[in-house]
Amino acid sequence: MPNNYALGRRTSVSAESLNPTSSGSDSWSPPFHPKSDEQVSRLKKAVSGNFLFSHLDDEHLKTVLDALVEKPIPAKGIKVITQGDAGDYFYIVEEGTFGVFINPTGAAQAGPDGIGHQVGSIGPGGSFGELALMYNAPRAATIMSLDAKSTLWALDRVTFRRILMDSAFQRRRMYEAFLEEVPLLSSLKPYERSK
Image (cartoon, rainbow, N blue to C red; front, side, top):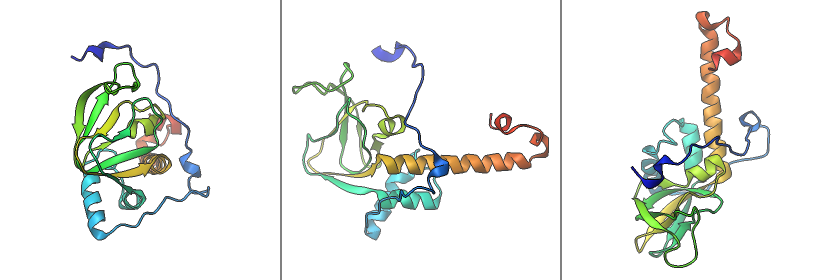
């Protein structure tokens, strides 16, 4: 087992609030970045195996693909995210390999060894950055390019949260409506059915 495995349990997990019922009533609209058919095909392949997007319907998946923006990484050793920083983007790797580095102090330090030890790597089709966006928490690791040329696709924090929250909310509403129609459960109060 890893040395830090026996750390105390978290008392809670929290994130900024987002009311999915109001998502249609405000002026927010998802960003759109034009892509070639080849790029769309590559992106569909990259997100198809990602558990965060596996439950999305075609409309939400199209919104995600349209909102992704290409981020070329021109050299080896470029830090994409730094441990301890605030999260702003979720990334999908199209080309290249990225190292995952964790500093035991919880934040990257100055100097060549300040990023900590490499604990893993992420290749094409992989993704990173979702935890900081989902839970409004600092970045848990430093991610650095390991290849001379790499390509990432980035999804901004607001779009990421809106799409995932809206999709989960719609799915929950559908299940609630289905359960309301089940005669055996009709006498239950809404909060009892939601358990």
